[in-house]
Length: 243
Image (tube, rainbow, N blue to C red):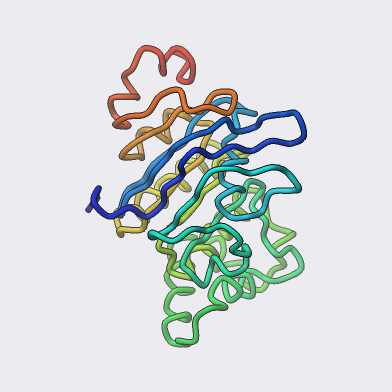
C-alpha cells in the first residue's frame, strides 16, 4: 500500500559535476513508502549518476544538494553501511562476486543478519523463484549467463530485507524472456511492500510496473507524474516508446 505521507527517499537540488561537465543539474525527486518509482531517460541522461550519488559510490566529483533516507541525511555515509540501514542496490552490470558460488553470493547478501533459519528460508525462497540458480547453487557466479547473473544480483540484494531497493538498468542486455521474468519479480517485490527506485531504459516496461515516474534528460528532470498517465502521454510516447 503506497503511503505518500511516509517519505523514504528525498533528493533536493542534487547537482553532480565532473570538472566542467554537469552530469546532474539540480534535480528534485522523492520516493514514498511502498512506492515503485521509475526514473527513465536516454543513455547518458544522468540516471546512473543519480543512483551513485544516493549510494556514495561516485568517483571524484563535485556533489551539491541533499539526499535523505528515512528522514536522515546520507551525506558522508560510507556505501557499505547502507545495507545495515536496509538500503540495497542492484548495480548496472550486476556486480556479482564472480569467484564465489551462487550460494555464497546469497549468503553475502545476508551478512548483516544473524537469523540462520530465516536466511536459509530466504535462500530456499529465491531458489524457488529462480530454479536456474538452484540447479547451479555450487557454480561460480562468474560462469553464469547475463540473465542468470541478474537473477542472482536481485536475489542477493533482497536477502538483506531492504526498506529501499535501487535497481539500475535490470533489463540491460537480457533476452526478452529473461526481461519478462525480471520484471515479474520486480512487480511481485513491489506488491510485498518493498519501496523501489527503478532506473530503466525500457520506458514502457518501467512505466507499466511503476506507480509514478520521472523523465530525466541531459541531467535535468523534465517530467514527472502518475506512471499510467505518462505511459499515455504523447511526449513520452514520441521520445521513449517509439510511438
